[in-house]
Image (tube, rainbow, N blue to C red):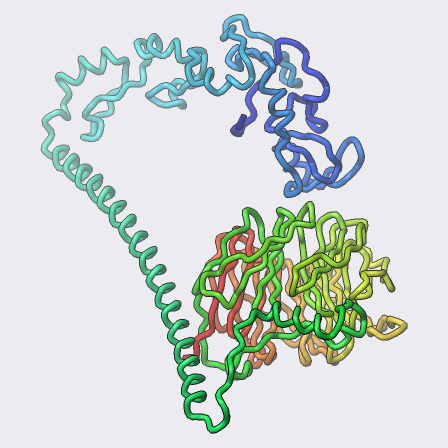
Length: 593
């Protein structure tokens, strides 16, 4: 059963059991939802209020989140069977209480709660506005409306739009209209004509707006098709060039191996003996940008423009994180799923869905030859790229939501409230931890050039030298620019995105503030630097992606293709991918100008 706001007045014929009352408001449950974190049931609007105000569960003192609730269908079925009084037959016992009592002058019907909406549509005791306006007469019961209209003294003369100001009972107005002085007014005829012309123009304007919307939709479709054609032409030219080389070459013809990469690796492993995942087999593997056939520095050199050429659809709720590895894109969502996409295919089809998690997967990371995923309950899993099998798990790795992951030097780094942990990248055994940070660590970044791990905690950035003793450097950056939600590091820059809508850039060697970038109108949720370190991308809760130059710190382009918050960005070759709360993943391609 679906409810609509505001909450209807509900009084049961018999006293309901305590299990059907909300733990927060102590009234009959209204649109019941169950909190995934504590397991207790609340009214939907109560759960939202508790999350908004930071109120803990009254029974076990666990923080509530409006995003971590699901509909309690079992309780809804019990509620639907309750016998209740019609809300149009109830009164408050007093102004200072929400206790209800039966109104003898109201509706006396009794029915099941599941029949409430159908009954209210036909109940003659329901309150409606007087056709002459609520301000004039207030609310009237449906059954009394006809009688009320006989005595209502707020009827207007039919020549009101010609200047008549007469108001009275219906019978008086009808008598007045026969001799109304405005009836034959020449000026009034002109005014009436203008009114009619204005109405016709309004209708015409609405029709034109609908036509413009349809034209805009068709234009976007044509642009998308044009981008697809351009991409196919480029691919065709590349293949034709390779064919010409094969025909004109002096050496023996090249034999193209069409065996899938995963199959070739499997054969190779079998020929070399049983493959074992070990520190030695992954010691040289780090998350790197999979560049295109042309030089990545050339791709991201001005002038260029990014155009949206497609959308990946398949998630049914918020997409929290994106990472790319070779020819695949991995995305995680609130439904506990990781979707694997073949990004070399123009069809953009999901080739597999990984379902080992049972709740929100907040972050993904790539490194050490593995894919890592972390969820809302503090669990971490690792996956093989070729087989997409789960190979490791650290259950309850943190006591709270894991908010960030990063990799480097054969390690996996994870963060939650007040804690950063270091794990063996293969076995997922805990090696070290940094605690007492006293706030949420919302972002991690590892700089391979400096062998440093950076952690954004509230308004500060902490950093550690990742060596055998995991030395914490004495310097910490206190930004004083608002809570940090995103972080990125290059050879020259340390960049933070904050809740105050701005991006702040620091010198990574001296930690001196260089400049601030303004362009978003909400929290900056994610940052991404191109491999050449010349271009910065930023995503925000304002649903936009901004493109910036790290050479002159100026804006280049604004991408506005999402309808809700942007939470993650990823690169593959000359393509940019963005994930959003609107459940979609957008694909942008760079075009040289």
